[in-house]
Length: 472
Ligand SMILES: Cc1cc2nc3c(=O)[nH]c(=O)nc-3n(C[C@H](O)[C@H](O)[C@H](O)COP(=O)(O)OP(=O)(O)OC[C@H]3O[C@@H](n4cnc5c(N)ncnc54)[C@H](O)[C@@H]3O)c2cc1C
Image (cartoon, rainbow, N blue to C red):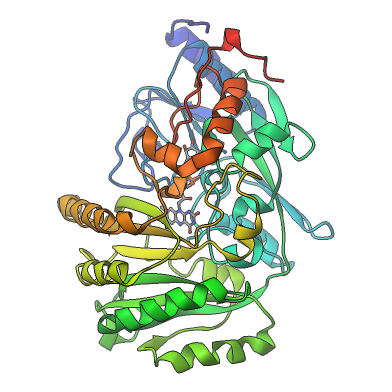
C-alpha cells in the first residue's frame, strides 16, 4: 500500500481532479454535509468528496487508498449505525449521482447511486412499473440494495437484490467493472447482500414489475387485542398468497390527519398491508381479514404505489435519534407473543416501534447460496427501534430497545438482517451470513484484500494483496 503524505498540496490537487467538490471542516456547509439521517451519529470526516460522476469516484477511491485514509461511502445516509460517514477520513458522498434511465420495453431501470427510493418510484410509476424497495421512500438505493432490501413487495417479487440485474462498481484498486450474471459473477454474488465491502457501486440496474395501484395501508387494533392479532397474523403469513404482504407493527398513533382525533397518541398494534393482485379481487381477499376482527382503524384501500411507499416519510424526518436491534424469526410462539405484548405496552416514545417484515414467498424461493443473503428460510425480519427527536431521551429508547431484543432473541433464528445491525461485533455479522461467510471472505480477499472498504458491516479479509490473485 502506498502512503503519500496528506498535505495542503495533495488536497488541492485532489479538489482540482473532481467535477463535484470537496468539503473540508473549515468550509461553510461542512456541518450540514456531515449530517446523516440518524441524529445520534456525530462524526467529523477530514474530507467529504461530493462525487458527480464515476471519474470522481475513481479519483476519490485512489486518493483514499494512496493516502491511507479511512474511507466511508454514503448513498442515502440512512444507515442506523451511521456507516455512511467516518471520523477523520474521507467520505465519498454519492448524492449528486442522481439519475434514472428507464427501459419500459425491457422492464428495467438504471439508477445512479445517489438516488433515494422515491426517485426510483417516481421514474417507474408513470409506466405502471415498480421494483421492490423498503417502506420509507427517503432511504438510499445504495445501502438498502447492497444489504438485501426488504419491503412491501418482498413476498411477491423477492428482495431488492433478487431484482438487481447489473451494477457498475469502482474497486479498491480504482478499476471500474460491471457485476452481473456474466461479468464478474463472484462480485455480483457478493454485492447481493454483502453490503459495501467490495467496492463503490456507482449505478444499479433493476428488473421492473407491472405494479401500479396497490390495495394497502394500515389496519390498527387496540393494544389489548395484541395476543389475538399476533396469533392470527403468525398463522396467516406462512400460507398467504404471494400477492398479499403485511408487516406487523406496534406504534403510537401520530396526532395528525388522516388519523382520527380519538386515536391520537394511543399505543396500538396493527398490520400495514399491501395487496398486489388484481384490484377486482382485493375486497374479496380482505373479506377474511376484516372478518377476523373489526379494526379500530382501517385505512386499507387502493393507492398509487409511490403513495404507499411514502406514507410514513413525514413521520420520520431526518435528524431523529435512532437505536436499532434486530433478528430473523422463523416462528412466533406464545412465549414470544407474551414478551411482545409487554414491550409493545412499554413503547418509550411516539416514534418508537417494532416491525415484523415477512420475508417468505418469492424471497424464500431463491437459494440460500444463490446470493450472499443467507436467511432464505426465515419467515420474518424483526426489528425493534427506539426513536425520539430529543437526545435527552436517548437512554430511555436505548434501554427499551436492548431489553426488548434480549427478551426476544432466544426465540429468533440466530442472525439479523445486516441493514438493521448497528455496531454489534464480528460474531453478529458472521451469524448473519452463516454458511455464506467463508465465500464472502474469499471474495473480499480477491477484491479488497487490504480492507479499504471497512466502514460497513465488515467482512474481514484474510490475506494481504501480495498474496492474492489480482482483481480484474
Ligand atoms: C427510516 C428507515 C427505514 C428503513 N426501512 C427499511 C426497509 O423498509 N427495508 C430495508 O431493507 N431497509 C430499511 N432500512 C434500513 C436501510 O436499508 C439501511 O439503513 C441502509 O443502510 C440505508 O442505505 P443508505 O444508502 O441510505 O445508507 P448509507 O448510510 O448511505 O450507507 C449504508 C452503508 O451502505 C454502504 N453503501 C451505500 N451506498 C453504497 C454504494 N453505492 N456503494 C458501496 N457501498 C455503499 C455504505 O458504505 C454504508 O456502509 C431503513 C432505514 C431507515 C433509517
